[in-house]
Image 1 (tube, rainbow, N blue to C red):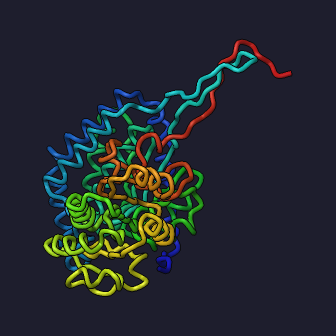
Image 2 (image 1 turned 135 degrees about the vertical axis):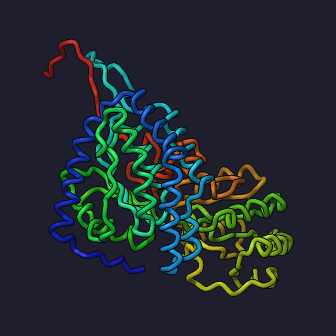
Image 3 (image 1 turned 180 degrees about the vertical axis):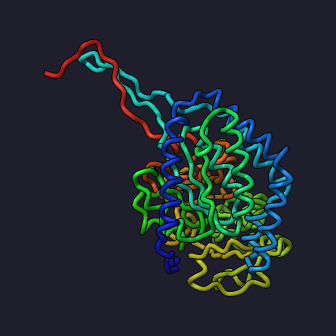
Length: 429
């Protein structure tokens, strides 16, 4: 896919974004030294506002975004990502509270040891500073990013998509009000207040004020940010996720896991897009799969060998193996055991999430060791590659690169580590 075209930042937009970034930098200094109790109080207050005083306004703002999305012909998957009702808002608030309850990483010291000259050295976790997150469609990211950055002592600049503008703005108010209540600068959570796409170009040029950019969205957005940013970028790339059903898997359980991985919420990056099936169990497993996926409304695109075993399936194309559908569509392929599955993942995987279903411990260990992805699972759905599900409270994104972070980015991944040393008069000779 070609990179999306972004306009050059006009002088007014550039000046506005630069001023926001400068204010965020100033705010980051106050957040960096805020104590744990203060940060927890901010998040607790924000959660109360999200599901209490501000909830009706957030849902109303989301309704405006949903109406515009339907009018503009957004896909069902995108609309599902956008939708916020009271139940989802309660889950967002629960995620904020879970972040507040996590251990504060700031100021913790690792690897403390005494050198032969008597110096005691170690590495202390510190905030990164100012983090810009550029994201599309999912307004819950606004709350997740704000909560994680506050708890890790960072300021955050939020550049959401135009399709969620009203929702994002309403959610951000909970955090700016909570910061103000704690006498911390509201600029610690900054929402770019325009839908002008040139603001993205301006934001990723603010290397004097912004320390890290995290893009979350379509392939075009991520490629554009990576290619044009003056600020270091951590990529949240597409999720072409696989489940491999081994010949000795529990087939009843495999059907349930496969349906969950594909159909529980198909419009998210950790949904399964390709199912690989060992030839040894294909004849028994695939008809069961077809029935279950049909009941879930899933279209099956199968290789030539699989099609006779999958009633109603259509022929897969070469492009299907590399496609992130984000919809009720699944590619299915028969492979020669675990060797064939690993070979397919190496050629078509996106380093996101890969799962094996097997009762063979040796094969499970081999899968964990040899498959390269930000989360590798045994006998579980790909849907677990999520910061909340993995106990991080929330996530800034799922990094599919290996520089600094790999997988869901929680509090520790939003920290750097500086060297510290304690001496008693040592001098270098």
